[in-house]
Amino acid sequence: MSECDCKDSIESKIKDKFAEEKRGENISDLSASLNGYGMVIINNTLTLRPSMPIAIEFKTPLKTNASKMKRTKKELPILFSFCPFCGVSLDHKLSEKLK
Ligand SMILES: [Zn+2]
Image (cartoon, rainbow, N blue to C red; front, side):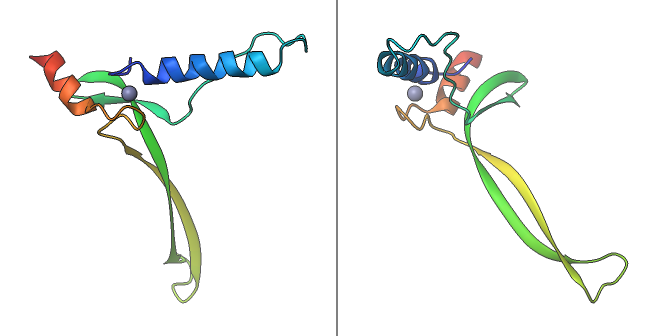
């Protein structure tokens, strides 16, 4: 569960807006999901956090031939400490829950 209801409320608004645009086109099973969220364990609690992926690229020597370089790509998420939509402190809410 997220610390505020922005994810659910935005997804609901997007679904409503899209359904309105597609009214009369006989669509079904409509869903909308904000993908920039992930489950993480913070203070022994599984929680849903908004995040942004970071693409990291670098060159590193080949193990078989150190004079040649190969490009390596990694993707890591950065977790937001504040809701990107309403600005509420997610750490503050979490620490309140633990009291
Ligand atoms: Zn929010």
